[in-house]
Figure 1 (tube, rainbow, N blue to C red):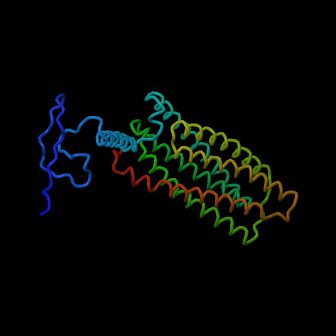
Figure 2 (figure 1 turned 60 degrees about the vertical axis):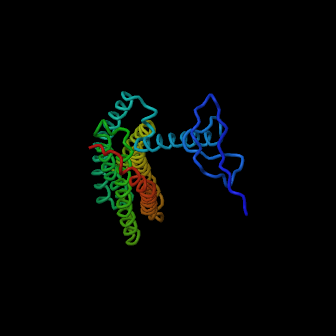
Length: 288
């Protein structure tokens, strides 16, 4: 006849009120007893529980902060609002300048059959749209640190980038296929230099503000302005090369294709990065 299992009770400590034995038998660890209720202090189970509670608290903090940008921990409220107003100001300035440049560049493109001029004009229109999206992004003071609104703005920018890039590439390929030769004059040079300088300055201001506000949308707008500046100087370069060597007629269209693919790649990367983040933050409060 096999011996009956013995019920184990923990030896009472007079300084601690011990719970009564629960009647469970010890099966796997003969040196320890399992209890319901209060555990003896200093045990391994206590340490494991404290570690789990600490990890749970850290995870909760992470979940709570996921709906905010990193700028919320770096900037004081009045600083954030000050930079938000600067972002609005630079966006309005960018819209006015790039709209004028777009009209001038489209005029050059039609009159001088310049593929890169058309590419710059289309990029200038894109710059107007991206600046308008930044205006929407920072239109509400309460949403200055909103990650969800930031990611939505970036997704819209990504779609616009891809559409714009397709138009630029198709126009450049068409001009190369029919062998369109650009004409060079002082008006083309003036537009190119002015575009390159102004767009480069706007790009620098937007990127600096974007880094302070940790805003991918504002940095993207700055990248678009930088591309516009490069395209402005590239018009000048391709026109000057063609002026001295007419055999290099394809440089203008080639630059347009290159810029188009750069914009497209950036747009695709933006969508890949931001679409999952929009889904992750969709349950957070939306700022209207």
